[in-house]
Image (cartoon, rainbow, N blue to C red; front, side, top):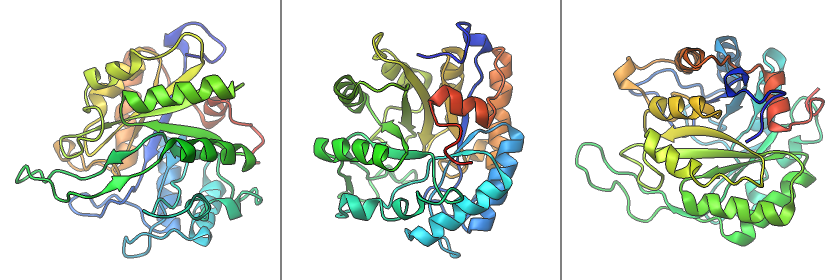
Length: 306
């Protein structure tokens, strides 16, 4: 684990990331931005609440998927006009797409300072992505597989460097995490590894459970020979218990209405959820990181998006 100019975890700022829309519709939580202007407005409100990083997906005006480079470029440009958040957008992860096709929504924008992103989100393993129906307990589908074989992982990590993007490596389980460390020992990175531990709610069994124990199983693997900055989130589940575990152990948190509707909290907006994380962080003597602090902690070139 690396620290931001201090060896005291309680003085280390907490990076709060936001997952604002994923592939989520607006029922029952209406606070899901779809259009570039809506995403930009949400970004500004999230930064005001204490966030420093944003993950997003391109969406059409009706909430459908939009993987075009034009839409992603417009989102980034509008966000950068009103916010300093670090940006880690999704690739065009369509089953059967080649690596070039998966990068086609991001790569064309990397030469434009107003439209370039900061991170390339690289999923470091394969998973059965079928969800469980919360009402019946049955799988809603039975054939959705997300394929990121070792060759794909290696190529995406290389392409990230070529595009001037910091790898934002995601892990659903310990086998993915072990792969991350294996790649790192070969690549010998000069900056911290940025790892997103994605936990899963009851609907999403592909990932470790969205609990403090689910996160601890990942943290038990943290090596002593590699610098790591980890961010915990939960897909289809409440991340707040794991968020507290991450914060007290020196890590970071990503949260958002795009991941989970938070019915138990009254269907809050993503900025409202950021405020919840800020409250937890301050109980442990940690303040939310500014975007500039997040850049330094995560090893992002301060001038990359200026």
